[in-house]
Image (tube, rainbow, N blue to C red):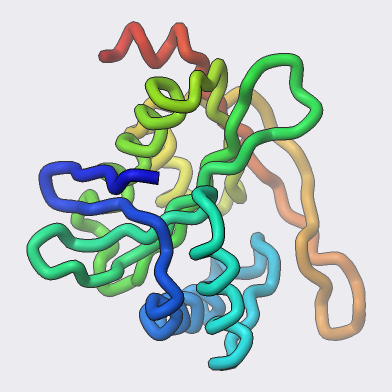
Length: 182
Protein backbone atom coordinates (compact mmCIF):
# COMPACT_ATOMS: atom_id res chain seq x y z
CA UNK A 1 0.00 0.00 0.00
CA UNK A 2 1.18 3.52 -0.66
CA UNK A 3 1.67 5.56 2.52
CA UNK A 4 -1.19 7.83 3.56
CA UNK A 5 -0.25 11.27 4.81
CA UNK A 6 -2.40 13.48 6.99
CA UNK A 7 -1.53 16.87 8.44
CA UNK A 8 0.60 15.33 11.20
CA UNK A 9 0.92 11.63 10.42
CA UNK A 10 2.24 9.09 7.95
CA UNK A 11 0.34 5.80 7.87
CA UNK A 12 2.42 3.13 6.19
CA UNK A 13 2.96 -0.57 5.96
CA UNK A 14 4.71 -2.13 8.91
CA UNK A 15 8.43 -2.80 8.71
CA UNK A 16 10.14 -5.66 10.53
CA UNK A 17 12.14 -3.05 12.47
CA UNK A 18 8.95 -1.65 14.03
CA UNK A 19 8.93 -4.47 16.57
CA UNK A 20 10.60 -2.48 19.39
CA UNK A 21 8.08 0.39 19.23
CA UNK A 22 5.29 -2.15 18.83
CA UNK A 23 6.50 -3.98 21.94
CA UNK A 24 6.61 -0.76 23.99
CA UNK A 25 3.05 0.02 22.97
CA UNK A 26 1.76 -3.50 23.59
CA UNK A 27 3.37 -3.66 27.04
CA UNK A 28 1.58 -0.42 27.94
CA UNK A 29 -1.68 -1.70 26.54
CA UNK A 30 -1.46 -5.09 28.28
CA UNK A 31 -1.09 -3.32 31.63
CA UNK A 32 -4.15 -1.13 31.02
CA UNK A 33 -7.67 -1.68 32.30
CA UNK A 34 -8.87 -2.07 28.71
CA UNK A 35 -6.68 -5.07 27.86
CA UNK A 36 -9.20 -7.41 29.51
CA UNK A 37 -11.58 -6.66 26.64
CA UNK A 38 -9.20 -7.75 23.90
CA UNK A 39 -7.25 -10.79 22.82
CA UNK A 40 -4.06 -11.43 24.77
CA UNK A 41 -1.11 -9.98 22.90
CA UNK A 42 2.28 -11.67 23.03
CA UNK A 43 4.89 -9.62 24.88
CA UNK A 44 8.26 -11.34 24.44
CA UNK A 45 10.88 -9.90 22.15
CA UNK A 46 10.83 -12.94 19.85
CA UNK A 47 7.04 -13.04 19.65
CA UNK A 48 6.75 -9.35 18.80
CA UNK A 49 9.49 -9.61 16.20
CA UNK A 50 7.31 -12.29 14.63
CA UNK A 51 4.16 -10.16 14.90
CA UNK A 52 5.91 -7.19 13.25
CA UNK A 53 7.20 -9.47 10.49
CA UNK A 54 3.70 -10.87 9.92
CA UNK A 55 2.19 -7.35 9.92
CA UNK A 56 4.88 -6.29 7.40
CA UNK A 57 3.81 -9.07 5.02
CA UNK A 58 0.47 -7.46 4.18
CA UNK A 59 -1.65 -4.34 4.05
CA UNK A 60 -4.11 -5.03 6.88
CA UNK A 61 -2.03 -3.73 9.81
CA UNK A 62 -0.48 -0.30 9.37
CA UNK A 63 2.05 1.70 11.35
CA UNK A 64 1.04 5.21 12.38
CA UNK A 65 4.05 7.53 12.58
CA UNK A 66 4.60 11.20 13.33
CA UNK A 67 5.24 12.91 10.01
CA UNK A 68 8.17 15.14 11.05
CA UNK A 69 10.20 12.44 12.83
CA UNK A 70 8.88 9.09 11.61
CA UNK A 71 8.35 8.02 15.23
CA UNK A 72 5.99 5.01 15.45
CA UNK A 73 3.09 5.93 17.77
CA UNK A 74 0.40 3.39 16.99
CA UNK A 75 -1.23 0.97 14.66
CA UNK A 76 -4.47 0.84 12.75
CA UNK A 77 -5.92 -2.24 11.14
CA UNK A 78 -8.42 -2.65 8.36
CA UNK A 79 -9.53 -6.21 7.70
CA UNK A 80 -12.13 -7.47 5.25
CA UNK A 81 -15.19 -8.87 7.02
CA UNK A 82 -15.98 -12.35 5.74
CA UNK A 83 -19.52 -13.55 5.22
CA UNK A 84 -21.20 -10.19 4.72
CA UNK A 85 -23.31 -9.41 1.64
CA UNK A 86 -21.60 -6.01 1.17
CA UNK A 87 -17.91 -5.13 1.05
CA UNK A 88 -17.28 -4.42 4.74
CA UNK A 89 -14.05 -3.76 6.60
CA UNK A 90 -13.34 -3.98 10.32
CA UNK A 91 -11.40 -1.08 11.83
CA UNK A 92 -9.00 -1.57 14.74
CA UNK A 93 -6.43 0.61 16.51
CA UNK A 94 -4.00 0.81 19.40
CA UNK A 95 -1.85 3.84 20.24
CA UNK A 96 1.13 4.35 22.50
CA UNK A 97 -0.20 5.86 25.74
CA UNK A 98 2.40 8.65 25.55
CA UNK A 99 0.50 10.00 22.53
CA UNK A 100 -3.08 9.73 23.83
CA UNK A 101 -5.23 12.85 24.07
CA UNK A 102 -3.66 14.67 21.12
CA UNK A 103 -6.07 13.66 18.36
CA UNK A 104 -3.63 11.33 16.60
CA UNK A 105 -5.92 8.28 16.79
CA UNK A 106 -8.87 10.29 15.44
CA UNK A 107 -6.73 11.66 12.61
CA UNK A 108 -5.40 8.21 11.70
CA UNK A 109 -8.77 6.46 11.90
CA UNK A 110 -10.48 9.12 9.78
CA UNK A 111 -7.77 8.68 7.13
CA UNK A 112 -8.14 4.89 7.17
CA UNK A 113 -11.94 5.07 6.94
CA UNK A 114 -11.58 7.41 3.94
CA UNK A 115 -9.09 4.97 2.40
CA UNK A 116 -11.54 2.08 2.90
CA UNK A 117 -14.33 3.90 1.06
CA UNK A 118 -12.27 5.68 -1.61
CA UNK A 119 -9.65 3.06 -2.45
CA UNK A 120 -11.09 -0.29 -1.37
CA UNK A 121 -14.68 0.38 -2.48
CA UNK A 122 -15.99 -0.48 0.97
CA UNK A 123 -19.73 -0.27 1.45
CA UNK A 124 -19.43 -0.41 5.25
CA UNK A 125 -16.80 0.07 7.96
CA UNK A 126 -17.55 -1.72 11.22
CA UNK A 127 -15.91 -2.18 14.60
CA UNK A 128 -16.65 -2.82 18.21
CA UNK A 129 -15.33 -1.83 21.59
CA UNK A 130 -16.07 -2.54 25.21
CA UNK A 131 -18.82 -0.31 26.56
CA UNK A 132 -16.55 0.42 29.54
CA UNK A 133 -13.90 1.82 27.18
CA UNK A 134 -15.48 5.25 26.92
CA UNK A 135 -12.42 6.88 25.30
CA UNK A 136 -12.71 4.37 22.45
CA UNK A 137 -16.47 4.95 22.14
CA UNK A 138 -15.89 8.71 21.88
CA UNK A 139 -13.12 8.18 19.30
CA UNK A 140 -15.39 6.11 17.08
CA UNK A 141 -18.10 8.74 17.25
CA UNK A 142 -15.60 11.49 16.33
CA UNK A 143 -14.57 9.40 13.33
CA UNK A 144 -18.22 9.26 12.25
CA UNK A 145 -19.20 5.72 13.16
CA UNK A 146 -22.63 5.23 14.69
CA UNK A 147 -23.50 2.90 17.51
CA UNK A 148 -25.66 0.18 15.96
CA UNK A 149 -25.98 -2.41 18.69
CA UNK A 150 -24.68 -4.09 21.78
CA UNK A 151 -23.27 -7.51 22.43
CA UNK A 152 -21.71 -9.55 25.17
CA UNK A 153 -18.28 -10.94 24.52
CA UNK A 154 -15.33 -12.70 26.04
CA UNK A 155 -11.86 -12.71 24.55
CA UNK A 156 -9.92 -13.82 27.64
CA UNK A 157 -10.23 -16.11 30.60
CA UNK A 158 -9.62 -15.38 34.26
CA UNK A 159 -6.76 -17.09 36.12
CA UNK A 160 -9.20 -19.85 37.14
CA UNK A 161 -10.17 -20.45 33.49
CA UNK A 162 -13.55 -18.69 33.50
CA UNK A 163 -14.47 -16.41 30.58
CA UNK A 164 -14.07 -12.70 31.30
CA UNK A 165 -17.34 -11.39 29.87
CA UNK A 166 -18.00 -7.78 28.99
CA UNK A 167 -20.64 -5.64 27.33
CA UNK A 168 -19.63 -4.35 23.96
CA UNK A 169 -20.82 -1.64 21.62
CA UNK A 170 -21.01 -2.30 17.89
CA UNK A 171 -20.35 0.57 15.49
CA UNK A 172 -20.79 1.01 11.74
CA UNK A 173 -20.52 3.62 9.04
CA UNK A 174 -22.01 3.10 5.58
CA UNK A 175 -20.62 4.55 2.38
CA UNK A 176 -23.75 6.68 2.06
CA UNK A 177 -23.33 8.12 5.57
CA UNK A 178 -19.62 8.74 4.94
CA UNK A 179 -20.29 10.53 1.65
CA UNK A 180 -22.76 12.88 3.36
CA UNK A 181 -20.03 14.03 5.78
CA UNK A 182 -17.39 14.73 3.16
